[in-house]
Length: 387
Image 1 (cartoon, rainbow, N blue to C red):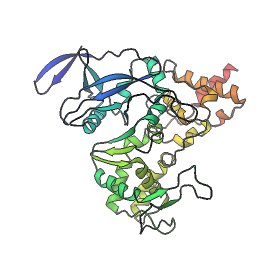
Image 2 (cartoon, rainbow, N blue to C red; image 1 turned 120 degrees about the vertical axis):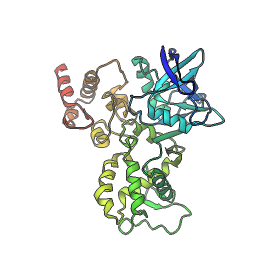
Image 3 (cartoon, rainbow, N blue to C red; image 1 turned 90 degrees about the vertical axis):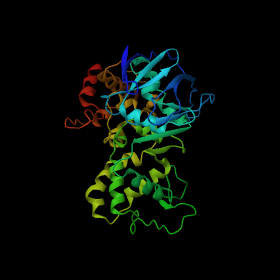
Image 4 (cartoon, rainbow, N blue to C red; image 1 turned 45 degrees about the vertical axis):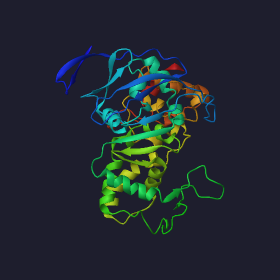
């Protein structure tokens, strides 16, 4: 039993922690967020939904699952947690982080329910077995969502200025993303259809931003969301309806990515760009140019500036991008230790490809702010004892 302080009543009221019911294979949970104003308590219900399998082309064989939006966000600190209320059989609660609490309050409609998939709520985080088979579905969950909502956080540091500037630029240009039509240049930037007056000559012009706009964009792109490993598949596997949300402002993901590409490839004349902005954009290069098919040996190059709390997720969070996923039979299993996960991966690699190239791809970074990196050399060397 948990005591929750209700500020309106100024008393401590006992509530029971929500008890998750067993989830069958092939099902996911969805969170129905009930309507309310920003300061109302967060109330919702959980419902299970059948989830169709995908074929090799990513097409689902079952489109009968419920319509939902998937939330991409940063968990944030687990201190000073908040609660959501689930009054289904009895009034019970689920503990969430402050960052998720703010996101739900900001996304909640005032007059109708909103159906969401949110990892911290829809997966029983205390059940490693369930977490394993649900994580295996996450790429599919974000691909099949009606819309992916990428929550950067509340408005701060002139983020509204940054979002408007990004929208203005990103909606006026197009980027020729691979796979490209024959005879076209990949990543070529052009004025969007119907837009005149924009000359995107790489050598002669940069994004039309003033110093204050560049500074606000720098602050926005420095937020934790852009460094989180999991968001790579969450946003890059999303459909064209995906949106980036900060405070009360939102920008379509396709426009946001267009603007980031222009900022990376073009060169504003402002000295601020070279002193502060350019290094940040260099770190975000892997995020901007993220592809949907990546070789295991390229993981470090693609994801080196990202972080995750659980080192198992260095593999699990990106497995939907891996070209070798089926060959190596990568299946999430949180009952295994971190060492066992990496050992098993190396064993599978060496047996399948009869090669030790995976060892050559290692490097040790003991001073890394994010801890262990791709791929953990000591763990890999231990695995060689198995041969």
